[in-house]
Length: 81
Image: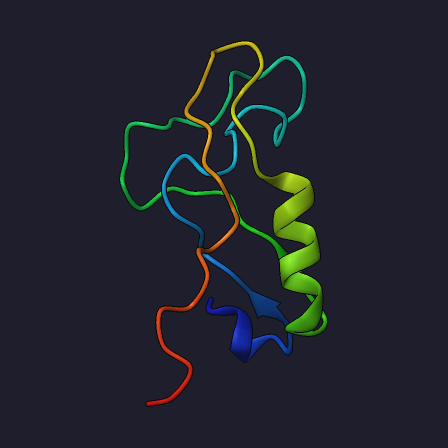
């Protein structure tokens, strides 16, 4: 069910931006990360909170030496359209 049908905002980030480990109960293994449609992302009551949540959730898996991404965008090349 898409988030907008439920009255919440959600963001589907780039694959492997958020570690798959830590989102299920401890006896279970981490979510499978070999599927390109299975990603972990934030859900919030408003769009402004999505950036804050993504900053808190993102980063490599500390046990698996995952891929780390920079979340800063480069400066704009142009100031006008």
